[in-house]
Length: 214
Image: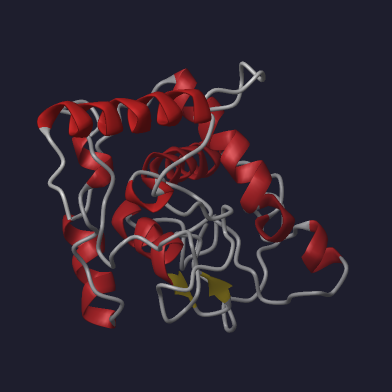
């Protein structure tokens, strides 16, 4: 067999290059033309919240690692630090003694707290914080305490935060519904309700089966 000379090889490669270029062309300006080895540069796409065969749980949208917290700057630092107190009686007492609000109370804070209260608290605790919300009136729950009762009239704000975060007695955790800043906003609104004396003329429900505030 005769060996191919350099001119023949150049001609062959030139022909291949020309065929490749023209073979990749298309009349559709939106088309990329023919793709050679697309797996080398085109990754598989998954629908949001669809099935992903790579992971054992098949979810394409991954859950953040346990204990992950959002990125923050100096202004939002207090709201994105991990909550340091465990869900125990000791943690509840420590929160009451040591955990304080980083917010400065203002009309804006109280207004935002009122919005949170009306969205998440009023149906049990009532407009006035007297424990006579619509669900109590309809006998869905019983024993919701008044903020003016002996048990809650002087409840420290740290214990209120702890109760929102973990839940307390009949009240479930609201950690997933109310974010860090909103918890303090609603706590300050509840404190205002107590200070204003709304509901003092209304008989407080029994505290024997009380749930924690707010």
